[in-house]
Image (cartoon, rainbow, N blue to C red; front, side, top):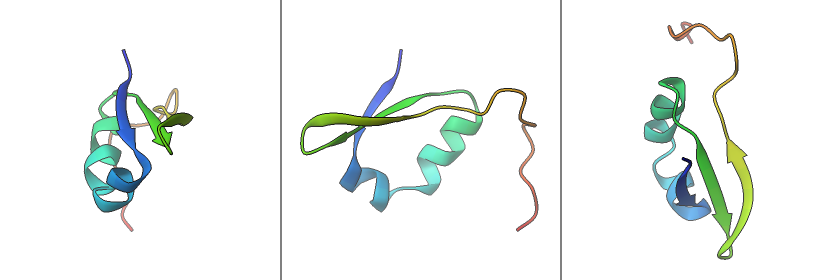
Length: 52
């Protein structure tokens, strides 16, 4: 089941949802109280993060 997050919260807390998506969670992002898009893990992606 997808977690729901609004766009404002996503912008304010972006690093946390990114970590969670890398662990396999999915998010549905609401914009003006309506579903706008989903954030899902990339299939086949490595679980380690690249050096930035």
